[in-house]
Length: 178
Image (cartoon, rainbow, N blue to C red; front, top):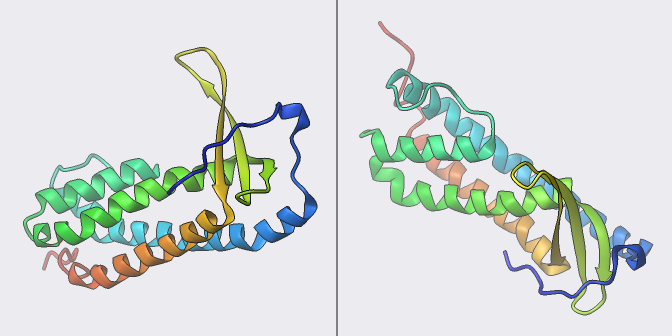
């Protein structure tokens, strides 16, 4: 996702006009809803593949954090002979979801910090404690409105592609031990 290059004023002088917040709200809602569907299909893939990976010793457990879930699914497509033929299609989707997740994280956990008129963009800012440095650091990302709309579209596109791929491994690993 392309962010904008920006020179920002001091934090104390920044502003976000009410009109831009009103314009942003439906776009952010679309990003949030689209991401929820993407996150859910990743979970559905884990239901199909993750438990089998644990049984085979590929993983110790089903992870919680997104990065770890994507890593486990990547291992599944590399190591499970039944699905390695799907890796060329599945792996790029997982990598795209990972990339999109970093931006979604900023949008979800950051706060509106500044409005830029040209190109019309919003800057998100987030404080994060850096354990190595022992203090808080400021993270800032600027996104044009068009880029935010593209994020929602990309989440839907990735979700749709993952949904189309899922039936190819839905019933491979039944728990029937009969």
